Length: 157
Length: 305
Image (tube, rainbow over all chains, first blue to last red; front, side, top):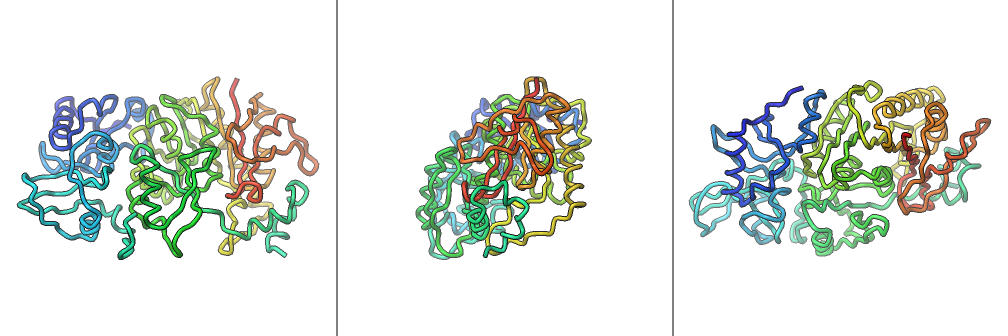
């Protein structure tokens, strides 16, 4: 079953976006082939991409970005956690700030700029936020937040 | 007397220290968390857990696997951030053994024929540093959902998910490593007061054996010469374990290799009731909860000449 592979031009566009927006070097995507599925651009290793052509697939691939429109993207938490684990930009959150975002709160911030940003907690990527006019809104997937028990005053774990 | 003493009576002769074995089934298996080093360093996870009052100890035979030694009452590991973000996978210690026994390495082409919910698949990805190919196959549409969710949670770019009936997996594919963690009667998972042992009729068992045999036969066809196949179950029944493997060994000349994971396993059986198996079946591994505090398992590692 053939996947909807990205053209070289679209691949370059996504790579440039991740480098510019999230600080992920292009080399981090070496050996990956990108394809579209369900509104997302996902990545497969070359070996998996080759096998994908010969099997009937029910899933697979690592989500990198959501396509918000032609040439407009939003980083996907799952992919960013892997690709930006060691390299990459982002906003460092305190535990209280992360707890607030997980509870659906919007944070006031003096950070400049606007658009999607990576959220880090104690050095580790925990998700994506949207920076807009002095506000930071959490964009963590529902699959992350729906089963969480934040435990009141208990340390976040 | 343990409620398992009668239930497991047919194994009395093949389980050493039978009373302790039954008593072990009365206790819940310890919780283990496997750290995903592609997202976080084990020390990072251990520190976060410690702050919340959770004390863990790395298993010496696989330090990424943390045994929970103490936790606040009612602590729900499945409702933590480290779980939701895929920093850890809740996995029984014994279920890590077949995946580690496979010896998957970066660049290998690997098939996990019965993959849901993905504990072993994600461990294989981890061992391969997400480089190469892992095909995670699961024919059950409901179970495939949990498989996909877990794969996404842990983060992998080397995995393809397929939904073939395992016995009919397309023969055009070939693999260096294949894991057949076959559907089974699941006796090894009956641990603790909440365990609800099901009645296993001979007919039900015979159906499982047919399925297990079909899966193993097809997997063998899909394995490259020189490749390694691991067959495992979480049950004690020799009919579902040594007998299934012995039939393949007799028919194909498959070589039974030792299981290279340093856990206290007992050797597989070379005889059961009126049947005798190849002496090489003693190289397979039986995990019993009173010797290795986890779920009961059977693991066979086979090489294709």
